[in-house]
Image (cartoon, rainbow over all chains, first blue to last red; front, side):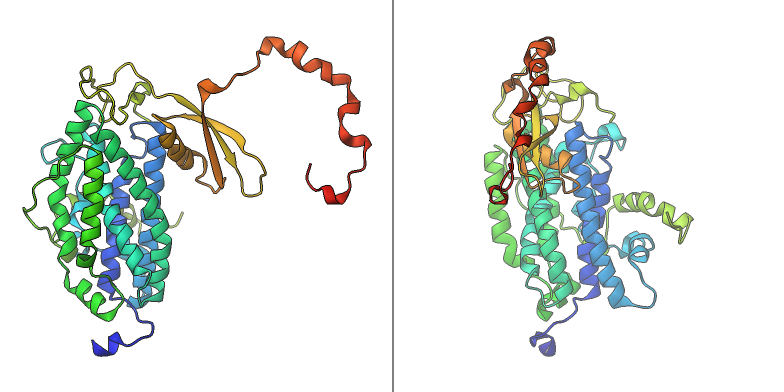
Amino acid sequence: MDRARLDGPAAAPIDYLLHLADNAMVLGQRNAEWCGHGPVLEEDIAMANMSLDLIGQARLLYQHAAALTGSGTTEDSLAYFRDAGQFRNYMLLELPHHGPLAGTAAADRDYATTIARNFLYSALMLLVWESLQESKDPQLAAIAAKSLKETRYHLRHARDWLVRLGDGTPESHARMQAALDHLMPYTQEFWTPSPPEAEAMSGGTGVDTRLLREAWEAEVDAALAEATLQRPRPGGYVPRGKEGLHSEHLSYLLAEMQGLARQHPGALW
Amino acid sequence: MTADISAKQLPSPGEGRDGEGSSQLGPLAGASAGREWPLWEVFIRSKQGLEHKHCGSLHAADARQALQMARDVYTRRQEGVSIWVVPSTLITASEPDDKAEFFEPAGDKIYRHPSFYDIPDEVGHM
């Protein structure tokens, strides 16, 4: 550890890169479900754009992790040939676009859930990417600088809708509040460092999210106030998706995402 | 798109808290039934371009949202460095019926083109 603290470039722990990559990959895949099903044409395109931003971030991180892993590992083998238990994303990001009691059909998707999740996650990632620009891993710092610009827009988009729907009609308000009540407990996972995160922090390649919490809370509280939404009471189950303990939803998401690559390994367009 | 056009009836901030009941149009098509998002005309200035050019239109609840949607719909392929949005209702257009009196008289005024003058290089773009 002490040697890692010395100045000079270093490589981030592979599992830390996979945590960041899986976050982007899983949310990108989840949000892409809206492609062709968006509430209006303009919003459909906006959501697909942001999904592609996230998948692009995931690719850069997977490429970096694959190069560090060596022995034939590629971005594709990381994205398509790991099972759910090997994914290190926040559980928040794999949940479907609806509350716990809704059906799973496309018609059951709830845009308020999509917006609440995008808001909570992009508010965190804005701070994470800002900090990671100073990472001792130069490649990660460069990825952070690129992702930061994209995330600024994602946050702007999600916050805008959060306020419109929260401070909108009685129905949009109620749905936004329900989505927030459902998703907020999952954010507790943001603040409990996993072993790879701890290793990245002590090596100077990663960020301690606990130091970002105050700024995140302030952003969330300000947006909720503007949206006339109530902050749910803290507490509840603390998920451990980033340690590979996932909900049932991730397997279904991965089955869809990985099916083609697994049925036709090495296939090219 | 599976959502039909009526799904454009969406809430805006502060609107209709004591609203008019709800519809079954989908997640966003809330209580403001009968109200449509207004239409906006979008103008984009490209990197090399000197002026904003009209590139299309879109529906949005207000100017801020129209700007963001224009960004997503019309600048995905690096088309622009600046966007204007204008409510379509604010545009006054010439009538097709007026075409003869409006435009045809200019047809034989060739001397109005500045092609009979030498423009000094220092003048630059005209």
